[in-house]
Length: 288
Image 1: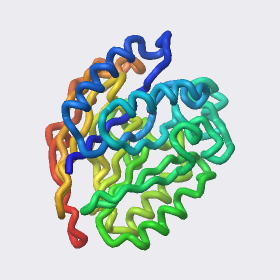
Image 2 (image 1 turned 90 degrees about the vertical axis):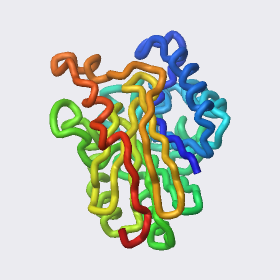
Image 3 (image 1 turned 90 degrees about the horizontal axis):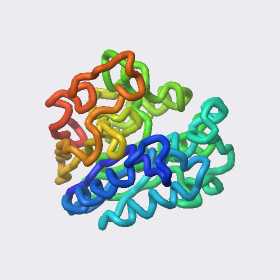
Image 4 (image 1 turned 60 degrees about the vertical axis):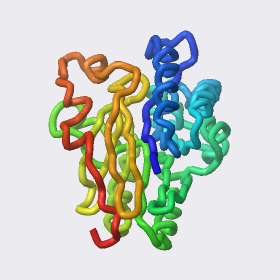
């Protein structure tokens, strides 16, 4: 089975104020995804730039995803579903905070009411998590229940990385901590208590990385498919094995030099990862 992992699309209604030219990038990106002919696509959040405050932008993202020619599962990022009230006050347009149940939010009305979604891929159970600080949607208790009953290897996918994606620079500081600070350690503890969780797929950082969360669970981030660093993961799933490779999208290969020019220029590997992070395989056997 061939599964694509894309993230941080940042679809934006015209005029594209934050990422000019994103519509053209995503038009080319659509062709790339369709040429891969995947069996499934996993999308780890930030489908939009202003979807939390403008539901039409989420509708635009859904139209793009529907045009890929493959079934997909999508969870929310902080731009689609504001992560907490403090950031909502700081960025009311980009990360609007909506304290209502997910079903009543812009994201829930466009992509469905469930903050926890699942799909059984045969050798692997996948579980997607749309998380907000305080866990108002009760995602973690539901996740524990699912994992307690799981009889096969599991891959979780969410927007926010649980461990740092780089040792230095902006990515040594930028992650989940400013968004869902109260959920990171509890989620790590859940993974630690359930050794059938073999992978945690994430986005948010606009960089390709592969970092262990526990001895048996690897965190895999993909690049920002829209604004960069434009890369995506291809997973080859077979019984007992999940292989992964990294391929380039249609957008720019950098990202962070635009946001923190004082720390740039960044080498290519800072965004796209070292060779060992781009290609590899996970043993999905229960006793690995």
